[in-house]
Amino acid sequence: MTTEERLETLEKELARAKRCYRYLLAGVGLAVMALGFGWIWAKTSASADAQNTDGVKKVILANEIIVEDPNSGERIVLGNASIPSFGNSGWGLTIFDRHSEPRANLQLDFVNRPLLRLYNEEGKDVVTLCTAYCGGWLKIQDPNTRTQASMSVLHNEALLGTGRGHGPGQTRIQLMATEKTTGLNLYDTDGIRFELGAGPKGTALNLYDPNGSPCIGLGVDPEGTRLALGGRQGSCARVSLDVETDRAGLRLFDENGAPRAGLLMYGYGPGLTLWDGNENLRAALKLDEDGPDLDLSGEKGGGCLLGVYENVPKLSLCDMNGKPRLGLGVFETGPSIDLPDENGTIRATLGALVTTRPDGTETKHPESSLWLFGPDGKTLWSAP
Image (cartoon, rainbow, N blue to C red; front, side, top):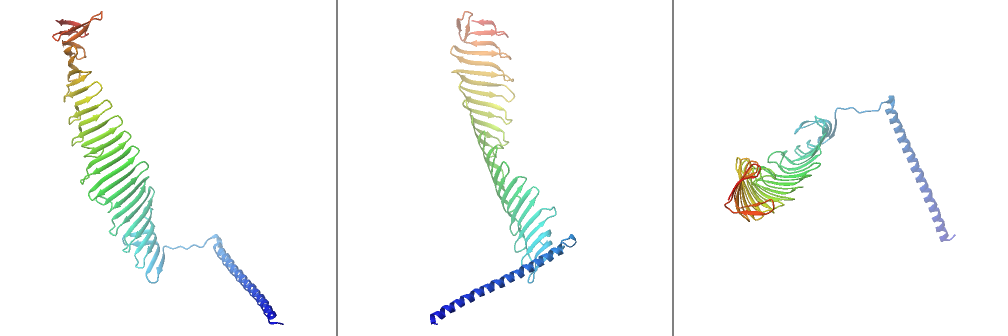
């Protein structure tokens, strides 16, 4: 047998040995797996039999469960854990660091609200998460327990705030949102300085002075745009500018918030209006298609109306009831004075007059004419 034949025979024997070795390993592995499954089945059956003895499951009952670190003591307490910064924290789960300071606490408080608190290295709570029947809130505090940021959702109202706590001089930024409105407020150490709100009825912006008094207000609603100076938009302003669909106006107010002067632009033309301290209209100047007119009113009644209508200047004096009792005009035929009674019927006329006869002819009477009329408007006497 040659050397090559011997090598070929040796290689075949080696390959056959390797296959037998693999089969042996597979057999041993299957045997081990079978033993493992048998052991697990036996333990499971024994556990099930133990739990189902007399139909009662095995239960661990304890007032408190504590997980300790051999080097630092308690690390997890399930039960009633006492936290120095809050006294008895109630029933819950508390996690401590290696210095025995609480770092996290989950519990139900005395009104059964779920609370989650996170603590700093000194054991002071810096983050609090709470839920209640009407919503929930999140609070973040600094080491001095002053609130730096808070977020809440209560009764369909969301509120986000940042600052140095809750109360005057502490809140800095406040963002609010309800089902229909949103708002943003900015504060300084003395109180509110900026207010922005939006809702179904429009948008409003208010700026406040250091004393917390409104000084500038800007509003936009379905009726128009409004700017108020010296007061909140629509409240105690000293100056207001309104722009609406059919008019625009500038108004001045006194210290009590009563309007005293107004410059208005209506659809028919411009107008100037003056009020007294009781908000009674005392003077009005306007210009319309008929011409300009000035209306003056007394404090307790009476007044006069001066105007130019179709190029005819007229003056009307009114009694205490506001009824015209004297009229003066300059017409194409000349000047004339009319004296009406309380019912508005002219009883006397002095000046130029034009009368019409039954046949339609007109007669012009001179400025020296005097006419007297009865309650029914018929002529009683005239001269010349």
